[in-house]
Length: 492
Image (cartoon, rainbow, N blue to C red; front, side):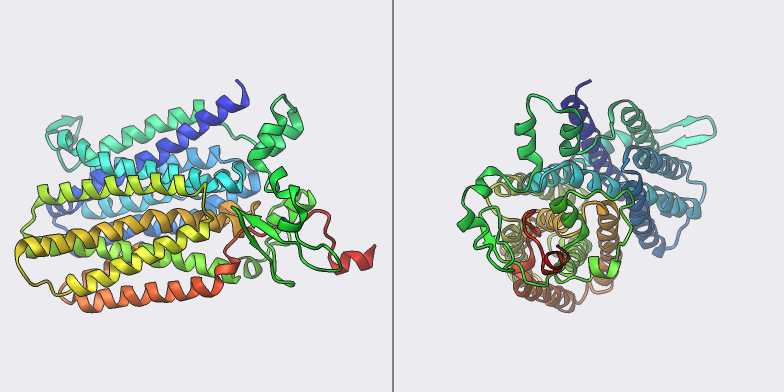
């Protein structure tokens, strides 16, 4: 099987992983509270069950990521993670007690840690120019799963039979259904997924007629960048740092700015067998641009989950929405998010990641201001209130793809490539903390929306200021292979 076909099959498997994760969320969430009630669970068990899934995932992410970084193999991590998904969903299906149900979400959450390994693979297997479009595609797969997930509940709710001693009903059927899907994925990964080397290394080892064409996909310095020394690299006299061009933007790095070890290695063509040798977490993650992007990850997910928690009680109180109306609303929001990812995928080929991130933050700020003005204390006729609510939700949902895709793409570029799995695991852990704290914050303030929305606005303002101050650093570090530092000149 040729390289390109293996690559396509591998990407199909990755798309299915994200699709199934979206479906799982969509089929479990609507019924978990009623399921817990049949097991005589206290109300706080709903929060525990949802938090358990995120909690185990945020712990597992860095572990899976470090594993794949050291071995440069993603397939074993995916297969191992799927075992937890299979076991967790089977436990959910059995559902003997509320504690087993809680444990099932904890076990299934461990399986999500493999996503960190996948993001690490995608970073190594794509060029910086195409990375945002790839990330937008896989995230759209998950969103599509969220969109079609409720459709599966249409037939799962009618299940009423036994498999041996186990009862299959509308509460246990989602667990059995997801267990089957993850088993199917396990088989597909075994036969379709390949641990491929990045194209750059593959070409060096095998050559081929399309060598020059392939190089354009993996090299950060193209013929276009090298054609005009004055416009791209500027003057190379003395000890001046070279200029770099990213998606048409030209910038000049600081003289003493630290460049993550992955980018130094790409410039010097050095290969380090142990990606964590001489690795410094402080130097890698406590840099200005990395802190800004991790903050963006936290604040975006915190605000998103807080608003999701607020929406249902709000629609019930002011509009009398029931299960059907809320389902239609979530369907329309899902369709908008997918359209947003498609839009970002197109824009990422024309604009730099930081520009897309800035646009997303502007939209999110406008949305939050709108919600404070019109939704914190709604007044007026039903039709006017509904229009105000729709505009607020539309703006909030519109901003999510811009921020989500751009910050993930930028994060992969400003952190070391060889430790990308661990870095992506850390990023997902920060997001996991946000998805736990967001609902807890909003859940206690559904009757005091001014306080809840004011805190969200304060976080967005903080993030906007941080991004403005660090804007010039939110680009991929670039080095020139012919450039020598002062220390190298002295050694020469």
